[in-house]
Length: 405
Ligand code: AMP
Ligand code: MG
Image (cartoon, rainbow, N blue to C red; front, side, top):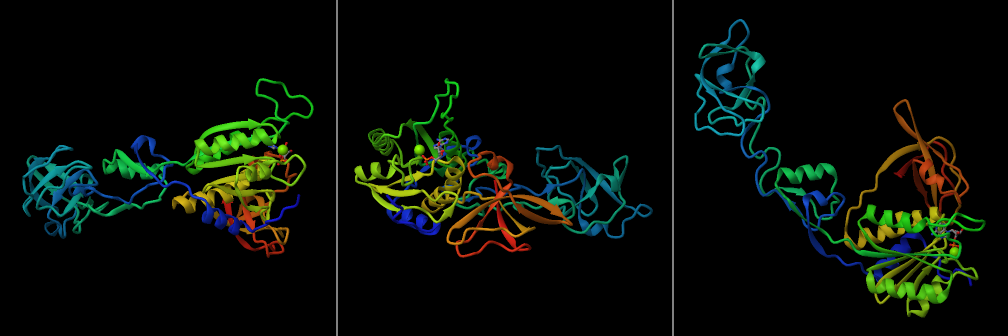
């Protein structure tokens, strides 16, 4: 059996998009459970933040015009009207002749348009000496200046980070509409896995992909609802896929996706009436990848090699998810200059691992070479860059996009 339907990565993503769907459904989650989830609706501010003109210092609320020319030697003398405790409001008006004490975060009273810091004042009985002039708007935040009522706070599709949780908390948005995470079944195929209770013996390995793919699903916004280990057996693989389709929106297999004697993934999909959209992607590592559609659901056969499986998840599966759900799954990228020539394999999109270093304030990258069968490279390398199919490597000194791992 040969790879008959070899495609580029972009073509592979497009084929999956054209023939398969992932559900786009809404659910409400508590604010504290919303980290990493993608918004299902634009979030608009339901109220002004701050809700009132708010002092940013401990000091005195004044009419700024009256402070003109004030200095330590010639202070402006105002009458004290008392103070406003934090968390309360007052109806007392500030006038050109009088002032009120306001703590940091407290409400700036009516009539005042600026705050004078306490360090620039002196108190004499019921008088306050203002020793510095302040322009209008000094040391305060106006009502709605942070966020005005009705303003777009976060757009639909945005995936929530800790700072977004802060923004939502400030708006008292305790229930958040998010994309329901599509369910995924993960199937690892192979005769070589030792069970977790078993000691390793010659020829046996640990199953990595169930764990790494489940973690990638969680990181991306997919919900891994089950992982299964099956042997290199056509009937076992078929029945695992069939069950997976009953339980999930997406079936991910790893291993058995190549064109060898005991690679049954493709046959199992065909037996279930599936449509093979592509077999083989022009990418390195990760060529033996299968994309198929069974009754409109995507079944993706990833290479068994753990590094390849992860890279194909980070590219193919993530792009498919992004486009189907219109989620802006963050991809942390930096620009770096290549320190040396980077070789690549023309005709294949080369995913080159690299390490980063800084020199004179500029970020440089160098290839991280390792035997592609070593999983350690994913923890040792700091990122990777994608060298286009048509390029014959990269010259030293080229500025490239680095996707951080
Ligand atoms: P395959 O794609 O099935 O030919 O597997 C390619 C290589 O990846 C072989 O060396 C397998 O032993 C290894 N491999 C396949 N599946 C896994 C897995 N779930 N965990 C770790 N290694 C795997
Ligand atoms: Mg195998």
